[in-house]
Length: 76
Image (cartoon, rainbow, N blue to C red; front, side, top):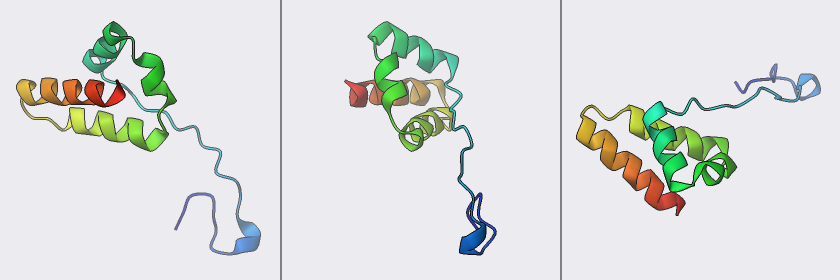
């Protein structure tokens, strides 16, 4: 069931939970160097979350670096 809903329409409340994404330090540094921090922050919560998830799930440093570069390319 969705957050903020008890199952009855008359008892639903607004979902005002703050949605933040913890950006990894290496990704944040590259965003800053590329001048794309504001562009990343302007993305929807879901898009930010998926970029970060993809980067954090990389098992090898080379894969992580490629995923960071891919995210930067999408933001340009």
